[in-house]
Image (cartoon, rainbow, N blue to C red; front, side):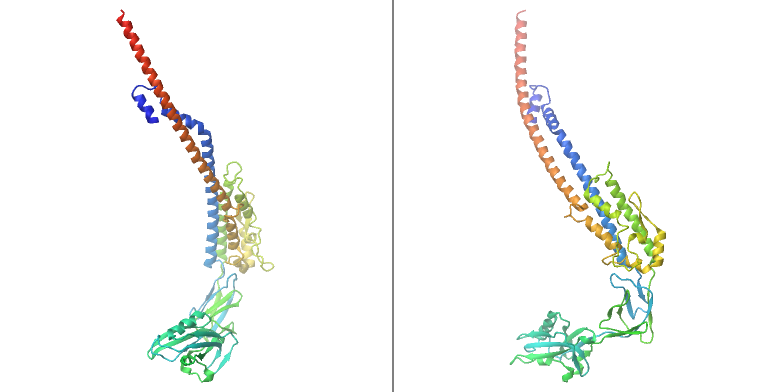
Length: 472
């Protein structure tokens, strides 16, 4: 309709008024206040989403960085072995060690390895029936059953040596198998787990008319060929500080407070040293970094929750996070700590100031480190308790999208409201456009009529002037 008005004006028949602009201005004025309110509301919601997301992200990055620092191992006493060819040392999850030990490895744990007689190929038939593997202690001519549940493997008709290996592996029950192509033919190799009690014998039950499995059976007590026993199952034997110890596996588990070993070689008669590092300097540096990072989060929160200018001044998620951080110093993060051991971040020197920011009481931290360095180190482990788990719990709570009282819950709510405002804005724009189009059409018709009237008036005036002129 705006085009019709322009054409009429161009022909000189219009009113001289820009009807398109008039229609547009009237429609805009009609919806201006509601449009401005929706725009302001949308901008506020976007700021709220951005502010809440930024705080949540900063907190998450802090928790992640602390987790990486804890897992790197430089905040807890790290165990090392002077002769690394003999063993490696570590601390079980959630534990710390201290001091030093002597280590003498007399023998390593081993697993029984057994072979079968050679066949032409892996696809050679072996008969049908079942194989039963019994576990216990094996020797060159003896077997002592451990009482462990035996393993029975059904061998169907037409099975090959490769099928037997697959059937054993499919049980996933302490024995693995493979077919080796040797110089004498294809041989089935069976391997058990480390440890003296994990030796095994093999018994065969044959299906009448499909014999052959008996060739795979083995029992040293019944005259089994010793040449088929490639290695025997044995425990590891070692001395820690001169005390005799044994382990069914070369991974020993905890043999002293905060110390587990992985044995890799022997050093009989030449003990080596196992010792723990002193992480006090790293712990002090970590606490300084921790306090600085916490203050970054607190600073964002303070600005966002300012009663006069904060976008999250009434946000429940931001308020909940503020409360959690304000209680951080006094929260017991090591509930299982021994009496007198550090239990809170305040024991590590974390102090809360009146404005909600944090500062590090280096004197208190140093006193705690001198009194109980192992207790401090235990607070920086990736276990269920400690600095990382506490901070991670706060971060996870702030990130729960299903909790309306969390930052993530607030973000979800603001995003929903923003979508609603966007829909209302689109609807309002459609209504404004409909009004503008309606007014343009109406004004174009009026302009045409005005133009026609003006043309008639001009014609009459010209005739009158002509008549008056002819009478002179």
